[in-house]
Length: 493
Ligand SMILES: *Cc1c(COP(=O)(O)O)cnc(C)c1O
Image (cartoon, protein in one colour):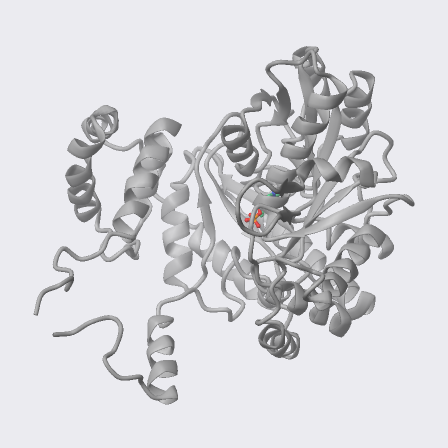
């Protein structure tokens, strides 16, 4: 009988070969992906690997037992505070990622407001529709109602709309620096002034921008005000595992004043085991990614980050120009940083070409881009995130993009019956829809959790579907990915 746990231990060679085999189909880190990958180069990667391994055994659960955990975290947080010009008295926490930073920022705002504004029974937060999905997750987990704020035609939050929606129970206003999809910075000074006027906290989500914008500004690129220099900004998040070039698992949440931070700590002395105090959601936690973040920071230095920021910005300008000069393509907005969105558009007598066909064609030429569905003011688009790896290939990508955009078939809506079937599938009960989803995946060509090489049909369908349908399908799709085979060996001889 074959079991997952081998009867006798395997050799080091066989184990590592098996891991390599498992990784065969992963997104390669070779400069051909325009999402997911933040690659500072082989030397930095290898230093990160060694630091990660060196820190593997440090348990961040108790910094008195592991003083290194405290030293590493304090160094990271201090670096982040310097980058975003935090005032004396500011403080921060290293977290496991942008989502956790944001969730703790919302928790801190909620719990601080409970104390300072106890009359508020149903706290609300103003969140631009372009803000990251993790604010919706925070709302769902923490019981803070999310009030969606409109954006203008450059996809920046509308201050007028925020003002209209400001009520006495708003505890938090959110702005992005920049937004992930369009790469534009919200009007942070205006939003922060509005928050301050109404006694609310203001969180700046600089998860993706925090480790780039300061270096662009120093290089003379005009960068909108977004950091603690702006009065009224009370907290700010920035990810080390994006443009800090650390391995996944590390971000930072910063507070203007240390007294605000206690509200996201959690202490418990009412059980029969050891008393706890956790600064983040995890208990026992690895400090490995933090250690690697510190190592990469020391390796690159300000000079290295500046060089990468400049290269990525030059590549961004090149690609934005390429999009604008290609008939049938248009930028959604000129970005403030090295990530942006573009879509297809009518050119002359030609109707807008099929965007998802374009992303299939790019994939066939070896480029991984991020097809993104329409929501609110934002039409379906292709998103590109530039990193030092793909920035080096920007000219080649631009040439392929121009060719791929030629003679696109016009955009067509998905078959109405299929869409209707999808909607009814999702509104059915969970058990009934489980098998149907399985069949649907098969019918769409999704095998073994892998999207087919030609995914345009799937994307067209999902783009036309409602957010409810998209969400339900995603849940059952990922559920399929993590379902164990029917025949488990439990107990069988
Ligand atoms: C990536 C990102 C997040 C969430 O970060 P994770 O590290 O994926 O949890 C939040 N906000 C913005 C703007 C981001 O780009």
